[in-house]
Length: 189
Figure 1 (cartoon, one colour):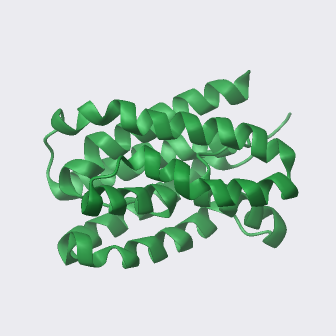
Figure 2 (tube, helix red, strand yellow):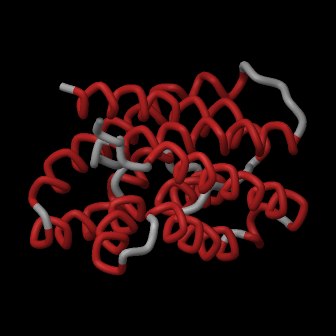
């Protein structure tokens, strides 16, 4: 039951962060969300739908690696993808400057992803890949997500431009910090 609650809360936060703070300024996130945003900005494809299509090959890989990650991951990925598309009306609600939107969007998304990872579920995509790699390589999942996110951002610089790209790096930095802080395992006493 905790995992399902974490999926809903995390997905809601991700949808708010993406639509309320990133999309109004054409900011990017990393990973599959970032690739989905690049496709949205360039081709007007719904971000959540792009995420679903792009995540399918990763889910095939995870099916063979860990079936528990697959089951909760697929639920998390579908919920977060739908949340991003359903909450698209938030794009018109907030009116903050570029830097503040980059920071708040990153914090909110990072909290959402961190909550989901803490309960061993994810939004799918590269978060799921990072979770698997973190277990294999014994590197914290937040660091792996930050590296993947940086690569995605660099691939989108022609679409968003340099000032927005710099602000997007602030976004993924905040996502990485809050994902790392919130995804640490609970200490049992």
